[in-house]
Length: 269
Image (cartoon, rainbow, N blue to C red; front, side, top):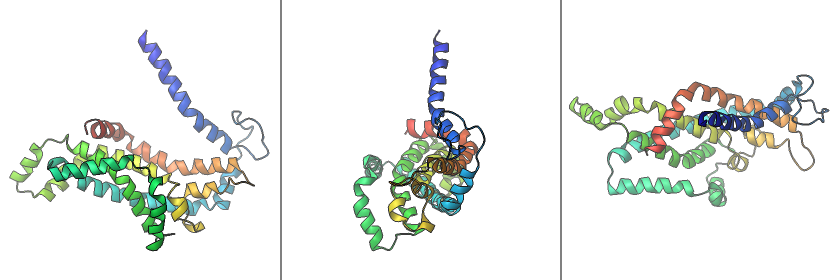
């Protein structure tokens, strides 16, 4: 009796999660003249929403900006997070425990609480409308979660591997690069997905630090379609559909590692 109930509950959860995607898909293919309910599919596939959103919003440049920022931020986060997690996990001194707890405590600090001084700092160092400033900002706010996940995962790797590497003549750097790092594929995939989605969809930092049209990301660009005097939901839906395709492709490529990395990194950490 319990199994059918579980299946029904799981099916309801899936349907609830699919509803926003159905509405997004439906609205992106509706012409502007179609004022019918968002729940009703369009009589024909209207593709002009995609072409208009791509041209008028300059989504091509926005997609490129997203790719550059997300790729650079994720690479730095993975590199720094993995390098920091190894000594924090293997050498649990009082200082390392303090650093680890300091990183974890940063997770409860909302980014918006320090947005004003951060904006003033970025202005003072000339980082407005630049890739490097927004990338470093994203890396800074993504590192606490990354260090938490990597540290938890590294702690599950047997220490005997380190000892075997030392016996074979490897240095600590060699052990990390040749033994530990190849074992971090599951948690690395998890970090890429979590941080990649976070950076790709970021609005709160991008809207303040990237003010030129040529530097805007997809969320900031699409927000221009909705204002006090203008609202084009169909174009926004088409733009969102375009913007989420790269993330879907990355997730499908890394999904086999995602769940394992989350369980081993978060639960055991």
